[in-house]
Length: 403
Ligand SMILES: *Cc1c(COP(=O)(O)O)cnc(C)c1O
Image (cartoon, rainbow, N blue to C red; front, side, top):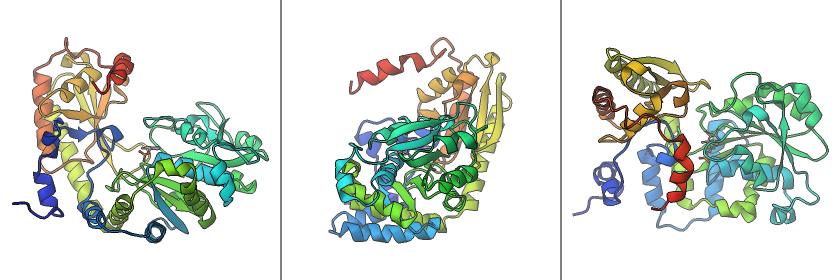
């Protein structure tokens, strides 16, 4: 007999991954799109199931979202879109069209519109796709400011023209972490010239700080730390948020978000307000200490707890892999990913001889399994097979899908 679909217990017990032929991976890599982002909180799952069979008036549902987003961020208004990347595209589009419905239908043709968008070179990151593509998607022209290692206020100021629509500021561990213009200075310079500032804060826990420091619009992912469904949250001044929302009648249509996702992320935001943040932090720290203690006696492995680079309240374990271990960092990451169960580590810096273990997406009991896999994998050192993983093969691997 079927138990009610709304019970989170039931959801966990059903082996949906097995049914679909998927590997039962353990995610110690962080909130990664390619791994299904985060553990959706039960409140979000329940809200999505509840609204699924109902009809709603979407503008009213988005109005409700606006209220909750405003409460949590301190913004005047907000809405939900498909992803943070979509949020960038529709916010930039809104800065070009403002509330001209005709211009909204005209994009990505920007004839007669302001279309230049300023972006520091050190902020031109990829989160799986290049951030500046979200600008180009709506017809915007990226105007680079500064160099990869430095940017100054005068460079930003002198890049502003009568065609400047907005300026994008990225907050992320991906960006260059030194030599860039601070958000405060960036906003002051832009505002003195009536240029709105859009902040990509996709992975940042701080829901109020960026608007407080001068952003006009700030964007978050609903599916990262918030534990909502795949969504983007747009928050900011009412006129810019409205102009971005109206893009649903234009280029935003291909980024449509359904009722279930809007309801789900509203529930996740409300749950975030009530979450036991301290308790979660303690559990994450316990996992880090367990892994650190597990690795301590092993030759050629050094494990250090490191803070998040952009000051999110989250630490990670940096695992340095030296030759005495019999592994390279990328080789050990690949060996763990090939294990049973597969353990997927945070491996974007393996060229520097280390990877990270991120404790923010663990189910109960998984910290112990990861500790066991670390020990077993390193003891069964298999260097020949896992010497250098995959960077070179990436293209070949991508072009093989769906085989
Ligand atoms: C994850 C991320 C994005 C993309 O967010 P999505 O919601 O997955 O589109 C954009 N910017 C930064 C800095 C990110 O970390």
